[in-house]
Length: 237
Ligand SMILES: O=P(O)(O)OC[C@H]1O[C@H](O[C@H]2O[C@H](CO)[C@@H](O)[C@H](O)[C@H]2O)[C@H](O)[C@@H](O)[C@@H]1O
Image (cartoon, rainbow, N blue to C red; front, side, top):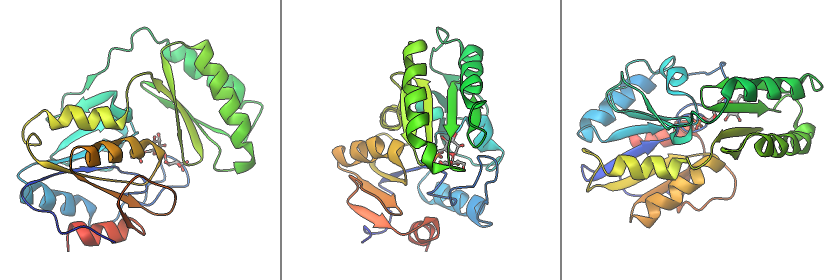
């Protein structure tokens, strides 16, 4: 079931992987729907600029796929924010020794060739998509790394576990944007597909807004679509 169409009263918040584009096999194997950049521009114009992307990716990474997106981007689960498309402000995680965290993740993964280590500016991800039977081994290793690196928070998602700065999250990213023009005073609409999106979907609904889950799986969202193509058809009929 889908909600009524977007109106000029809405502020639109969109996740990227699994929501606007299908989840890739590896982090950099993104298969961008050809019409996506133009669709995001149309939505931006239609909603008076109140369209933002809230992604787990670093902003510089997301920009490789959507270099001209005109709206705000919150990256790294809210650890980064770019309002104007150029400047990126970040959370103060200078206490975290990111190079040491990357090195420790690589050291663990050397014993498990199917595991892919993704280095991020604010943390690290272990992907076990190539061998899902390694899920528990990866979760246990990341729990240990979290203890070894105070100030990190665990973030589980599809076939991956991430250590990111403690205290960030997509719900807080949405809150931060909702304080700013042109989002302030509007009814939020959040669409996402994965665990990190659940807190933001709950927050959107708590604010009297709408949450749309993309794909299968348990969710707090009151609405659901089957895949990114179905979401695009609703957003931009
Ligand atoms: O918040 P999103 O925009 O949905 O980004 C989430 C993560 O996207 C990338 O991971 C995705 O691709 C991985 C490679 O196949 C896959 O294992 C994972 O399930 C997908 O979510 C990116 O690599 C991560 O850093 C992002 O956090």
